[in-house]
Length: 195
Image (cartoon, rainbow, N blue to C red; front, side):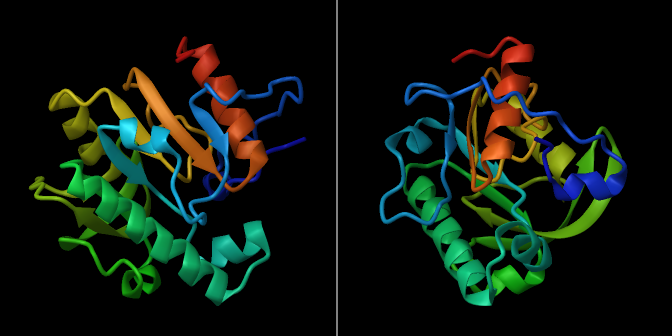
């Protein structure tokens, strides 16, 4: 099986999936969406949330769902970020402007970008939950600043390949696609994170 990810449009190689990797309940990666009534308790063990969900077009391509399903997905992202903020934990959601009408709990809305190792992949809008001031709201800057502040456990509910968090000792991640969950588990095992 090969993994689909919107990152592939930037020339990244597809990941081969090992069907023998099966996560157990005590592992750090879960095959679920944020669409449930209650979030898994493990989500609240994270120090912060950082996620780059699919834009509306990508969501439709991956999940075969419509605008209503995307709206419910964004509403649940908003619920999760607000719940984490009540615990004093910041959240950063980099997504398209369409999602903004559902991310109504954000404290700040900023121009941002998805970058990896200084390479810009896409402009994005960054919805910030919590009182966090940064020089700019790009993925590289956000993640570097969270590491500098001593945050150890990241939460990403749209983990994709799971490679953005290599600098963090622990990753709690989920994705609506089993292939992404599988690839993230494999990658975290390769870099020595078996938490």
